[in-house]
Amino acid sequence: MLFADSPDRSPVFLSVTPNLRARGVDLPVARRDPTGPRAVRLAWTPAIPGTYAPVSAYAIYRSDDGGSTTQLVGTVWTTGPPATDCAGNALPPHLFVDCSIPAYGKRYVYIIRPVDAQGQLGDAYPVAIIDVVQPTNRTSISRNAFRPGRGESANVIYQVTEPGRVRVTVMTQTGEVVKRLLDAEVRGAYTTDIPFNSRDQGLAPLVWDGTNDRGEVVASGAYFVVLEIGKSRDFRAVAVIR
Image (cartoon, rainbow, N blue to C red; front, side, top):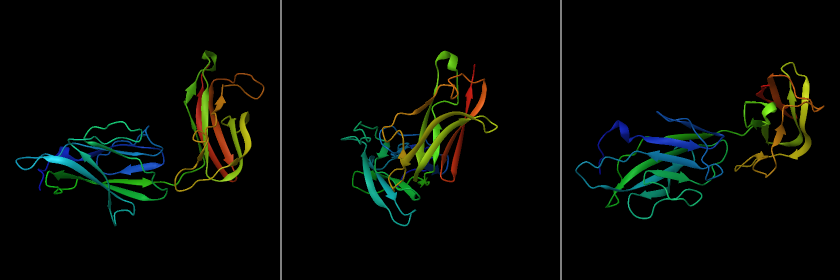
């Protein structure tokens, strides 16, 4: 079975959770898929049937070894029961969510092929290549600027890949300590599935309300939220507006 050439036939890579990098031709920026911990969401435009048998399904193949071998991980039917996302929600016929959790440090290749009513495979769409980068010790901040006078604050989530004493501190641009948000032993680690992340562990986020250790609201300007564990340091900038 053949499919007419068309620039619109390229699959569109919609979303991938943090720590995944998507590469390919005309792939949009990766975004988090809310239905799975690190689900991969693929979307594509319909294959053009022309004058031959119409498309009855799309076969989704994935390579877990960078492209050397592939395996069928899902079939999306154009008619009949729809595919679902990780939360069980029905998906349109040109969208697929792979809910299996990929391993860090690996490269995954997704291949989409249309299928006709006789089960014959059509030409493959261009592949989507996903590199799952190793996690790092880092923080993320809910906003990059806030106004304490309006009751605003910044939530800080931390991720650590090793056990040890974790310090999260707000500092000035010259390195002066403004506020200590965390100083505690954390059993941080990561597996091939997921690193230690305070949000995923159900811990409340650290909150900086724009005050120093004495409870005084700091002056307007840029500050750094610094995470320290062992010899590792991570900086995130945040601005206070008064």
